[in-house]
Amino acid sequence: MDRIRIRGGNALNGTIPISGAKNAALPLMIASLLTDDTLTLENVPHLADVEQLIRILGNHGVDYTVSGKRLALSAGSGRTIHFTARTIVDTTAPYELVSKMRASFWVIGPLLARMHKARVSLPGGCAIGTRPVDLFIDGLRALGATIDIDAGYIVAEAKGGLVGNRFTFPKVSVGATHVLMMAASLAKGQTVLENAAREPEVVDLAKCLNAMGARITGAGTPTITIEGVTALSGARHRVLPDRIETGTYAMAVAMTGGDVVLEGTRSDLLQTALTALGDAGVEITDTEDGMRVVRNGGGIRPVDVVTDPFPGFPTDLQAQFMALMTRSDGVSHITETIFENRFMHVQELARLGAKITLSGQMARVEGVPRLVGAPVMATDLRASVSLVIAGLVADGETTVNRVYHLDRGFERLEEKLGRCGAEIERISS
Ligand code: UD1
Image 1 (cartoon, rainbow, N blue to C red):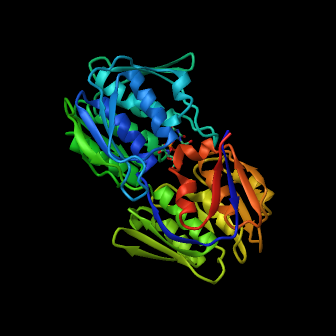
Image 2: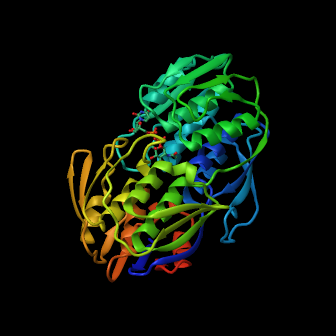
Image 3: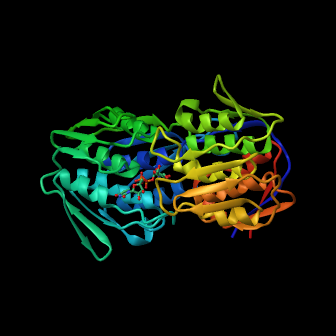
């Protein structure tokens, strides 16, 4: 298994290109199941999760071809991939595939909408909480589907097709919003989704679906209205920049000090996180094609954050922000409200000398003057990158094990950080 070895102490200076968003690419790829025409996606990141989803979609009958640059390390150099689901050959998503990536469960929406049936294994995915699927079930039932659970599978059927309805999410869910938006696009009549997720990735999916002929308004607000159409066509769509990758590198620069331009991204995608960084003493300015992050001299001020659905502070940046706060000049409090078990990085950060105490959903982080390198274990995607951020300032050597978690969501991380002066390398074994 690959490891990442970091020798801490170097400031980051230079340019980091931001990739297309993983969390947008995945639902966009799944949307290709809705049409027999070709959906072309530009700026698709090269990530293990994307490759895995390509295999899963292939199982349902989606063909794909890749064009565009693969390896150039510049903004917008992501691949262009053409997806064509001419014929759906299988409406079953088996456990062996779905358990490897939770988001693949989302095929249930398009399969049900287009084929009027789907048999999808209950998901696995990141070990960051119980992550139930009740909202998907209730929402799809509201659109007229019958749903049974049989031997670990959700068996869904909509004889004669889905029918539009009004559905209020009892809790904000990104995945369930994606799925119901896709399903309702091909339902009969109007669907109104209340308390929908407002994440930029939801807006990106709605834009792509509209380009395919869907009639969706209100994405990005809590109320999304979808007028069902009888068929969708192909389209060409560019995946929006990854706000979590953006925030992660901004936090890395905040941690090490330095001056880095994050290229090909947009500050409006992560305003709350940038405000927290500003409060911590980091200077962030927009550039023509991205943003510039500077921390020269001056310590890191302690800042309290609470994770929340968009536009709140993203749970996917919580671990990285905690890593930053381990070096602050005081005490900060970080509260996680989205997932109940998303503090697995705490004990690993402690191995590097961090002082963190947990009480329920809140972590109290007492800043320390230095961290000391050690071997640490990546436990999930975002937790693992928080260990890299800590390693960048820890004295001596930090080795992050189980790097496959990182490869799921960060494209060529060691290359991007290495080019800005970090001493970081991948050790393949
Ligand atoms: C997506 C993101 C993930 C991010 C999360 C929250 C992708 C591929 N993943 O995950 O990176 O951390 O949003 O921003 O885009 N819930 C239920 N019942 C359900 C569905 C969800 O109770 O049926 C709960 C979850 O357990 C969690 C909360 O709702 O507590 C939010 O989860 P959700 O927004 O659905 O996360 P994902 O879409 O899985």
